[in-house]
Amino acid sequence: MTVSKTAEKSSEKAGDATKGRKDAPEGHGQGSAEALQLGELSEQLGYVLKRAQLKVFENFLRCMASLQLTPAQFSVLLLVEKNPGRNQTEIASTLGILRPNFVALLDNLESRDLCARIRSTNDRRSHILVLTDKGKAVLSRAKKLVATKHESRLNELLGQANREALIEMLSKIANEF
Amino acid sequence: MTVSKTAEKSSEKAGDATKGRKDAPEGHGQGSAEALQLGELSEQLGYVLKRAQLKVFENFLRCMASLQLTPAQFSVLLLVEKNPGRNQTEIASTLGILRPNFVALLDNLESRDLCARIRSTNDRRSHILVLTDKGKAVLSRAKKLVATKHESRLNELLGQANREALIEMLSKIANEF
DNA sequence: GATAATTGTTATGGACTATATCAAATATCG
DNA sequence: CGATATTTGATATAGTCCATAACAATTATC
Image (tube, rainbow over all chains, first blue to last red; front, side, top):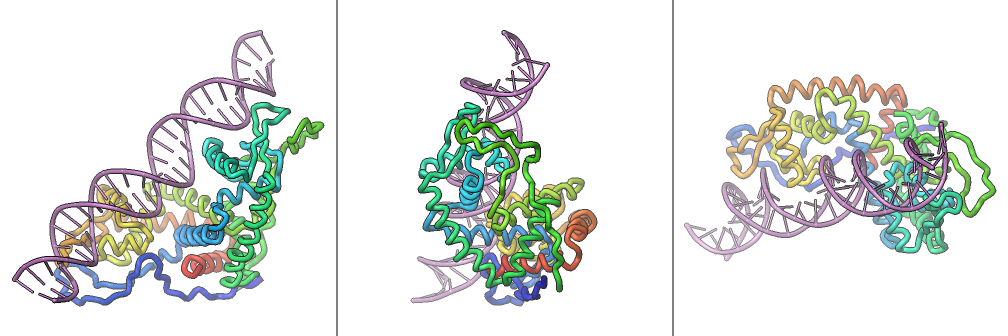
């Protein structure tokens, strides 16, 4: 497994910092005027990780605009589909979502008829979660959109092999750091 | 540059889902009882990226507990050190922080005497940013902590080469996705 | 059968993010 | 020059996400 070196961009990003320098006679401090040096920042794992995460979520939302699914909602649908019949606590905690915060998320999915809460006959405290037919259909379309417009984007950027290596490393960090 | 395959863990994570199944006679739905299947979720870039980011920030905060520096504060100090004499707008926008939100962040750093706002003589609207002596000292200690307790942790987890490859790929995503 | 624990829920506060607006200062242009 | 537009730091405010406490209903424990 090989990683091809490619990131040569000097990294610009937020804002548009590219106008013209003013070489004033240094009244006081005033370094000068353009292109800040990121310096050690571009080597900071946390910094670059956060930036990448924001970009990926942003792209995800654009890809899912037609279905109106957020990353969190998508992950819930995926998990419920894979594990039908689990209750809220199980689904939520697996996703790292606190039970109180999961309620509104589910209310949303249920109000859109994508997911349903069913009172369990075994334990009448808990709500069993299942995807509705519409939920299954929407999730199916969502998966295609993700594969087509989202993951594919990453593949052309990094290449299939690097993409897999990346996910592998991130998983390792998420699970063992 | 080569990436060694290492992440073989089946990815567990939140909660402790590893006890024993109960094969109840399926009163209604109730799948069964343990270890949810993540399924395609573990392959979703956004999912794994977010989880990794949270873990890394978490670890960063622990490492910086003695200095009470958040990732955002650390990044500001780093950037101001590397680019002394820039104004708030420049520093903030480079970090992807909106000017209004940058004010409180700076108020904090300034109240702790880590950073100073100096009214520019060239443009009396803007505040030039500089690290105080204490700010420089704290940043220096912070860098050592990060290198010692934070980055090193990543190195033993992935290996030096993979760590560099990872940061390179994340940078690429952050800048070109 | 009394007490403890669990489930879904509500209320609430904190952190982070995003927009509109403002006064002071500067830039632009007729 | 002088009117208008723009920029800078700041405030106010709203929205989202995350975290804790508390509660009623239900179940588990002893």
